[in-house]
Image (cartoon, rainbow, N blue to C red; front, side, top):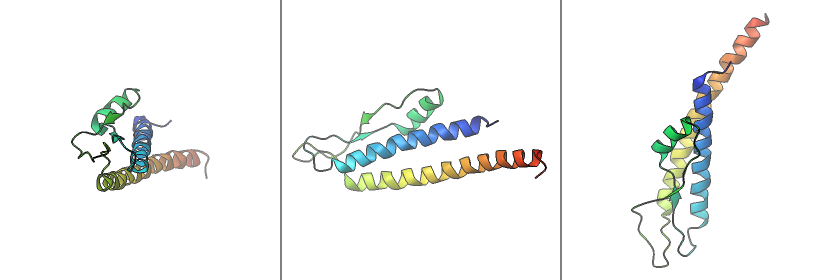
Length: 112
């Protein structure tokens, strides 16, 4: 009964969850020598996710490396967290709307 949009939103939420875990790991390792920031190519991965593929983790490019070899930039990670939260809120709001429509259809069919 749920349409393709709902399925796509669920996959999108999964992708956002993966990115959230990566950003949290980056922040947790901000002081770990030689740790390299991990991310996903979000646009590519969303297209791949719609085809049923798992996200591929990549090393973030173009980040300044500290003397200990670590390249985590806390400002970048904070921005990524905020961006991810905004995307998650939008997608979950859309998903709730889809589920509400299904619930209304079911209740309308029962004469409630």
